[in-house]
Length: 165
Image 1 (cartoon, rainbow, N blue to C red):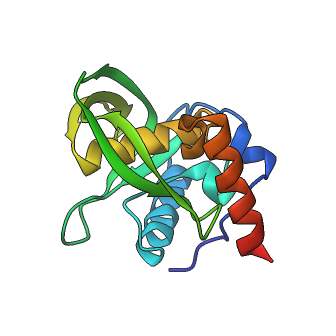
Image 2 (cartoon, rainbow, N blue to C red):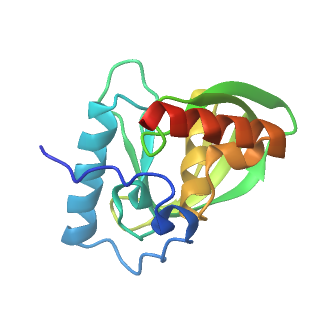
């Protein structure tokens, strides 16, 4: 399946809060399918709709060892986060060629509307938790590098600009 291109940083959709999804429709399901195709093509462990220029609060996450276990989420929000942190190197297809080690809670409980249109609370741990939080950041108009100090963020963006040339 083809997917629309990743919007390049600093496209405004990447800095704008996504619109809540009113209901899980066939259109929403088609967007999720497209997002999974894009995520698998990267390859990556998660994707938020704004990364493809779609300003809706939709995300997919699949941190399984064997693909095909994507969790489809609409309007995800963190209900609870562990105190214990986990560091992981993060990047984004919207800003290719650069990565940074980000510290996030090791485990989170997330409430979202699932593919059946039902509200679900689910616990995510490890890479799953990291990816879910990364996608929720995208839906709020934040990028992973917003978790860095100003100096580190400026260096990362300068490196990304060099990489683009």
